[in-house]
Length: 624
Image (cartoon, rainbow, N blue to C red):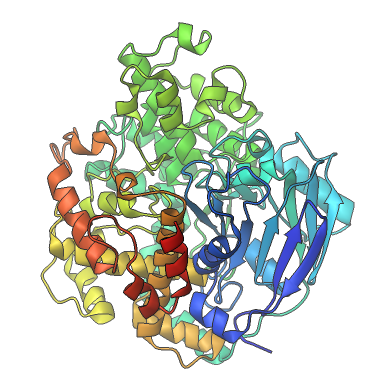
């Protein structure tokens, strides 16, 4: 039996109501690893050229990595992908928890779903056997209710459920896929792909095992790393990712009022520490994670701890970005997103776009059917989330995302839509870290902070020491507001490293060096794998996603930053920072070249595809 993977992928056709499995073999897993890599491979192989994201032929892919469900610390992640309804290109989102581990225990590494059902259904997987079941009784219900109902129907409280929610049913373009109610595969609108297929949920139960080649070595690695990093995690364990609000405020990096500013006067009211003091009722974690950053919060009559609690992205998106310091308003909006299946980042950013458009007088209550919303309007935010999920009134326009909403309204509101490829920026302003902002632009998915460099790794001595150990980069630390060739080189390496994590099924909070990552992969799989091979796997995954976008008609013209990133930020610590467009385009050309893509068009060169062992993609690009 293989280690680290089960060598089985399930294919389900909802139109024909059939299922089958394939066994790709060891070479496939060693080439693509899982997660992002498998998703990119499957989309290029199985999605028709130019497929509409809502068409039955658009594959929806759930993919674990070779580390998912292993004894490696924080190996509870997996990825979901499809052609994105939000960007029209490669869509991929990562999520933690236990669902991916359960799929592995059920004897599967991935699930690829095509077709569409005429009536609502859900996919039930138990120990490798799959069944398409009726879900008409689940349609239109909130996620916690649906999960409870599925477990009751199946007579097993240990079933793990991934579902699209009401927002996905209504094809909200940034609908997410909720796992176990409180964990979201949040970006790219993948919940809407699920809804278009009339697939309400994928329920999984596995009683098998996941083998590790060298479990004793994994214990040593885990124990050593915990001793090394335990102090670093204390803030995350106590206050969750929201513990970072104060630090970002101090450094002028807290996105405020639709990314115009980097500091927020009401920041102290929306911190992770404030949640811990007043609303925290429990903590949660993911598979074999020593950190435990998940929250459970409650507000009597308003917020149910079953839906977990807000991450930093929720606090930023519904808080400072909207000029809102009412924490209960944020908690309610976050719960609504989890209950309906909505990406908190795109929801908050789209509402912030509307607020600025109102402030400038470019949108009025006459346009919105009576809605008049200004920055700081705590009551309006949850109401708008509700309207978005149900596509009611002006919520129907907002459900398209800020970019499409701005295109529909016009009048100059396009300048206030802060997005890349139609996907709204996360709560990390690109002007606060130039490498991060740059990476948003060249990302295949549009703006995403999970697989994009955070410049802190290159701005301090300790970070540079890790870069030297991993990649042989020996130069001095680089300021965060630098976009020189040195920064571009670091972005090329670090983005590839993060892509590797997304393929392995590993949480990037661990921030392992490449050699240490190799040690973990060897201990799990038993492969005699080297750091070079792993980095090539990350590069391969990135280039496959780029190739899919090229095939689908995206060009270098889509690898750009929104106008706001060229405007000086208003912030105490970094006042005036901006990304100069000329400097950006010089950096983009350098990055393309370093990745083996055409320096002007960004199209992967045939020699690079062959060097990565994916020469078959060259024919697809040439045909496009």
